[in-house]
Length: 247
Length: 245
Image (cartoon, rainbow over all chains, first blue to last red; front, side, top):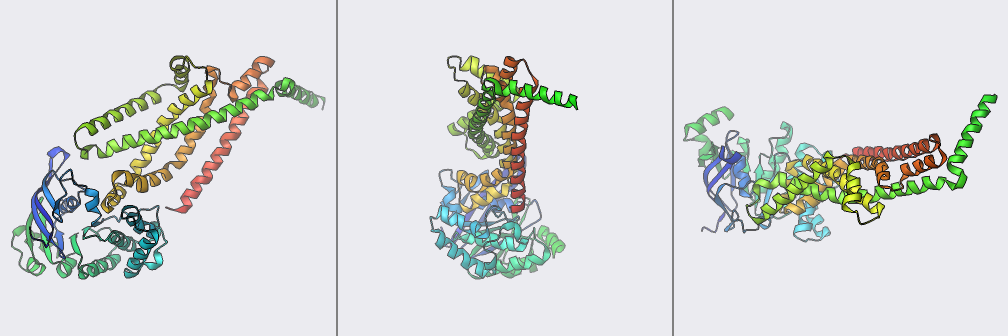
């Protein structure tokens, strides 16, 4: 296997409701180190399910996901160890409301990586500094705006030093004027060389930051290409009509 | 004003007969002590039982589908079924019948009334506590579990660090209410001869042939305790609300 490949997905299928709903119908994909893969598609196309299968929040019905060469769909693999290296950011932030910002960011490194509280807090403060939220370290999530929550959610995942970051529609629940601040953080992250898989409706981000864009529809990958080509010369009719509607 | 002093004399006479003569107030005091002891111990049993049962039930409801078929899942299904039977039976029968069964059938060879009371009321309260806590666990957004799991916490760690603390905060007022209900329910402990507050008062009634004083006294003591604890619960609720998270 190519050593540059971080995640390799083969024949991924996901059924819901005992097989009645086919969310994913055989997905093959590779994500290389340092790549920013943007997944777009209409709602119900399976793009979120695909992303959630990558860290097994959704257990695929069939197919394999290789992460760092290990088959994480194998029942004997300890998925918890692999998830530490796969950060995830959710549409609805999912910050822990009973902990401060600093508490949110340090609980996993302290409990799982056995870092000292001081060491974890220093790292957290450094990251907060980078996203301009150092002054909110002792605030509770309920005291933050949506954009601030999502930036905290991103740095919370970064505290675990992940090898890849998964974004599940990170800006969809935000007020329009807060989208920019979150995308900025993601862009910086991409420029710093982080491997990212981003499910989003932000075409501007896909075009500007993405190294590859995947278009999904009906549980399949319909088309994928480099952003420039993807948006300028879409091949399939389905993508053409989709882009005509969203651009 | 003569009638007023007659009533006063009558009342003070009844009061003396009910509580002062032969130190009869000791029945009330001893009864009150037993009521509080019974409530406190039953509450402990109830909370331990309730937490265990609620975790089994909510884990089964939420995670059944992703569990791997096999011995472990079968065992879990078995425990879940036991919990369901427990909840149905306990919540479907009167607590008086339950304590009679515990004392005269299950613990027939023992004469420890307090122990029988603690077991009966603990098991009874546990069923209600379990449903309260389960409600709290189910009310915590699924995204919280997903966020915990995505960081690498296993299921137990996610429950312990993330879900349970939030669930507990939500259900604390309901739990406190369950405690108040339990306090009043222990009044039926007299059915097995346990001298609680109610039975203490009733004993005085039996000795003095006067109903008014001892029964009203018992009622007032219950009322005072319930009002005190309700006030505490209200304070707690306000504090939880203002802390805002």
